[in-house]
Image 1 (tube, rainbow, N blue to C red):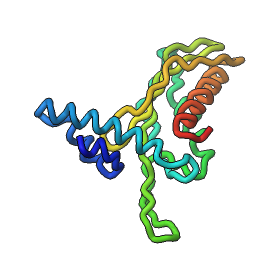
Image 2: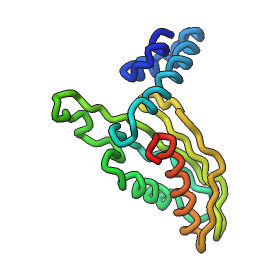
Image 3: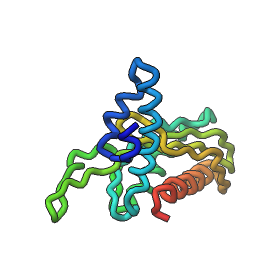
Image 4: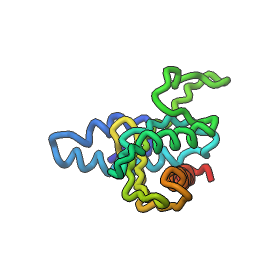
Amino acid sequence: MALGKLKAPRSLESLSNAIVDEDARVAQAARKALAKVAKAAVKSKPFKTQRYEFTVAGLRGGGSGHNVTAEMKDYFMEGLLAYENVDVGRSAVSFGKDGKGSKKRPLALDLTGQILAISPKRCTLELAVALQPGGFVVTRFKRISANGKSQSDALRNAVKLGLGRVLGFLGAR
């Protein structure tokens, strides 16, 4: 509970481990503290001054017979990599030092989601942003819908809209 009050990002890993504790009271207290720390960690710095490391995983297609999952992942990665302070995937040198000698640890996030519905000209997505380690879901975006001239265009537009919501949540917009 004290870690939740402190909102110290360094406690994320310990709290993530504690949410699966066999003592239900410990797990519940850890979940509450983790919620406070997670929201504080995401909102603690302006977007441009924070480094982010996204893993784009767990994306699922809509069962339309056309494998759109890889296409959707590519669109998300393309959109995220447009920002200089965002890496996609687990990069080897994520703990570099800035000019002042302090470690700049990126905020590690998972972007997951699924296609709820897809047709030749419309796509609806659901997305979630989770912290790593532990996979604590910080926010969800439900029913993100977009139209397009083709299925691929509708998917690209829905991803663009969803990415806008994720980046807006992080303070980029």
